[in-house]
Image (cartoon, rainbow, N blue to C red; front, side):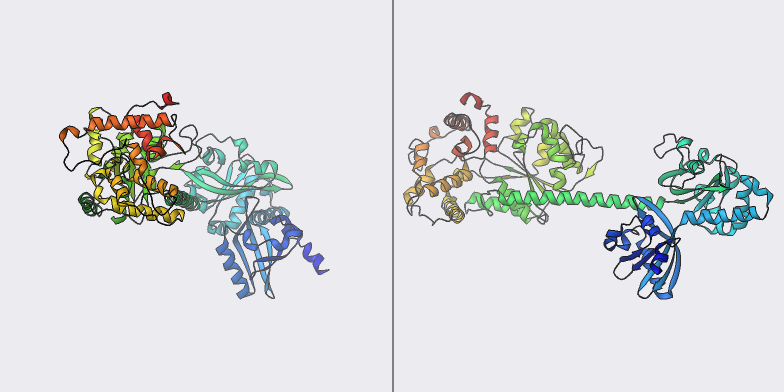
Length: 616
C-alpha cells in the first residue's frame, strides 16, 4: 500500500542517498520529469541532473540533514538539453532524503490561476476582461513580484504588455509607461542576436497563448531601451480563464554574466587545447630528434680552429644575439647550434630545427608560421608553425639560403618585431624566439644575384661563426676516428677494431669533401665490412685515384682555387648520379655513396643546376 501511495503521489518524489550520491527510489512523475528508466535506476547519480547548480544542491542537502526538512526554489536540472527550474520540498528519512519536486513555472502558473479562479468565484466582474485579470494579479502580489530577482512580463492574447515588475524595468531599461499596452515582441524581441529580423509568428512568448504549451528558451536576447542586446533565458507560461487562453506570463533573467563566464571557460579550454597541441608537437618533435642519427653530442677536437670556435660559442651563447653559422656541408653546423642553445638561458625548451632545403616553396609560410583551417586546399585543421613552437626557445634555420625571396620579408618582420600571422588568419601573434641560422652558400653572392635580401642578411649575421672543414683541422682526425669507432661499435654491438698508422695516414691524405659526416659514414661502413680486429680505408685511395702523400711544402701551382674545387665537386656529384642512375635517396643512392644527407645533396644539385633526370 505504501509503495502504491508513493508511486502515485501527485508530485515527483525522489528518495536519494546524499552520502553515496544515488537515487534509491523514484515515483512515476519523477521518472517522467527526470527521464529515468526503472531498469537503470541504480546507475543514476543525483549530481548528473543538477550539474548546473551543484553548489546550491550541496547547500540544500546539508540544510535538510541539519534542519530535518527544507524548501528551495534555487535548483534546476538539465534533462535532454532542457534546463528545468524546480521548487523542492525535502525531508530527512533516516539517513536518506525524500524530495518532492515540481516545475517552478507550473507552480507559478497554478498559483496565479488559483487567484484568478478564486476571484472569479467571488463574483468580481472586472475579471471578465483580460487586462483586469493581470491588474488584479499585480495588485495582490506587488510586494512579492517586486522582490523577485527575475524579470516578469504579462501579455494578453494579442501580445500586448499588461504587466511589468521592477526587476524587468531594471534589466531592460523599459519602464512601465514605455511598454504597457504595446506589443512586447515589437518593443524588445524583434531581432535575433545576429541582427536578422525575428518574425512574431516564430516568437515562443506568443506561442504560449496560442498553443497553450510552456515554452522555455535559454539562448536569445531582449533589446534594452538603449538598443543593446541583453542575453536572456526565459519561460513563457500560458494563462487561462475558464479554459480559454487569455495571455501568458514571461519570467526571464539576464544571463550576461553566465555568458561571460562560459566564454571565459571556452577561451580557457581553447588555450588548453592550443597548449595541448603544442605539447604534442613538441613531444613528437623531441621524439623525432631522439630517433635522429646525430653525429655526436659534444664537439670533438683540440685544434686551434676548434678552440677558437668553442670560445666564440661561450661568448655568444648566454646572449640573445642571432648567430649565423657558415661552413661546408657535413662540418657539424647543427652541432654548433645545439651547443649554443644548451649553454643559453633558453635551454629548458627544445631547439626547434627547420631544414629550409627540404621544404617545398609553396609550404614555407605554413611551415614557418602555421595556418588556420581552410586557409588553403588540404588545410583541414589549424596547424602550429615552427616559430610558434619555438616561442621562448631557439629556432635553427639550416640551409637558410634556400628560403624563397618572397618569404624573406616576413621572416625579417619576425626578427625585427617578433610578430607574425598564420596563413589565412588576420590575428597578429607575438613570439619570443632566438634565431640561429646556418648556410653552406655565399650569402653575399646571393645578395648580388637578388636571391637573398641584404637587410635579412644583416639581421641574421649579428654574430658569425665559421664551422671549419675537416681538411682544415686534420689534427683532430685521430680523436674523431676514435670517437666514431666507439659510437658505431656500441650501436651495432661489435668489438672495437684497431686503426694502423698507415691507415690513419691514408685518412689524413684524403680531402674529405663530405667533411665529418662523410668520415662517420665511412667508418661505420668499414666497421661493418671488417672481418678481423683491424679496419682499413683502402676505399679512399680508389676514390681519390691513388692520391700520393703531399709534401710539406705545396707550390702555388698545385693549389686548387675555389672555382676549381666547385667544378670538381660538381663533377663528383655527376659521377655519383651516373653510377646510381639518378637515384638520390635510400640504399645505393648517390647521397649514401657520397656520405651526404639526401637533403644536402639535393641542395647541391640545385646549386650546381644539375639535372639528375639525364642520368636515369
